[in-house]
Image (cartoon, rainbow, N blue to C red; front, side):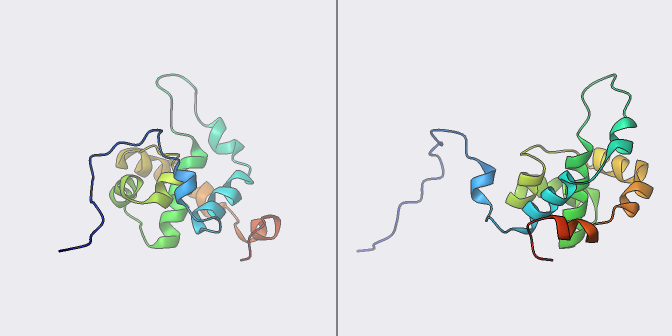
Length: 130
């Protein structure tokens, strides 16, 4: 006679799960989000004209890129896939899933601004140890 826990993959959650609860408190993804929230992205935000369908927020896309760089995911297709597969990427993307074209276009459009982001100075302002 075996003594195993039941495996039930069909049971639905009573309430939608919070990605925030699934990510450890001192996770790198939280640090990336906190640092990016402290950056002045006025130039990036101002570059959007505001017409057409709603665009993905530059803070979210920059977070996906920076966290991807930090963890070795550089391809926009891999980054898109990670927003489905990885809790950390889901946290950064706020459980949204930008497609690879959106990620690649953002990177190409704002490459100079992304290269100019200084994360070292933000470490001292953040509550994280660098």
